[in-house]
Image (cartoon, rainbow, N blue to C red; front, side):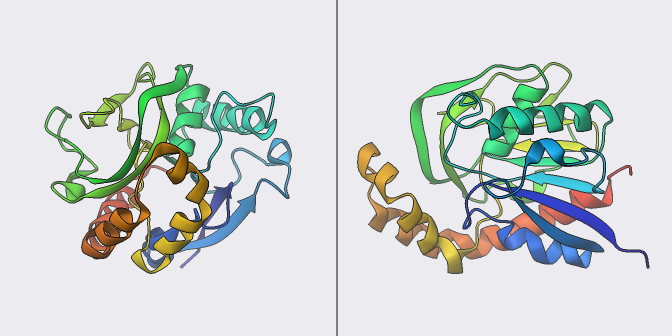
Length: 234
């Protein structure tokens, strides 16, 4: 069997593919991380990988002056999405995808950090996120985005209307984190300790909730990803 390739654009070490790595390998993908702090995203071939995954990070999709990599990634995504190549964005990745599709990305009314379910009730069927129904997922964002033109809204929460969108079978943007591994959750708490303190969010509660919910999310997230991969049009 010919192996497929996935390039994962990573902004910060611990926000990696997490629980998605195993189902990707099981689906026949070889994984390559692109650490944009070390590699020039502007020099990447936007069409090379069979699947491009853009991961999360603690910067904003509008921070191009402070962090020029933002503009490089949006340009990369603009070319890839124009060609309808399989693309998955998680948190910052989804925001960068929205920007590449011409939508506005901006600070939300509040930071949404914690574990809760997403509402799939208003989305068109079949919803590629169906495996996540009633499963608490990890939210960790302060920004939001307008729904890009030509996309379908898949999920919402009370604090953030646009939690996920798709465009056909090949393009999926997720504002939340379905990929987080419970065994590595302490990296999130330590890595984002300053943000938690500034927002007045208790890491003890987040740690306790991760112990309660992460196992179910790992199972449901893998099922969701496997289903989405099976419908890609390469």
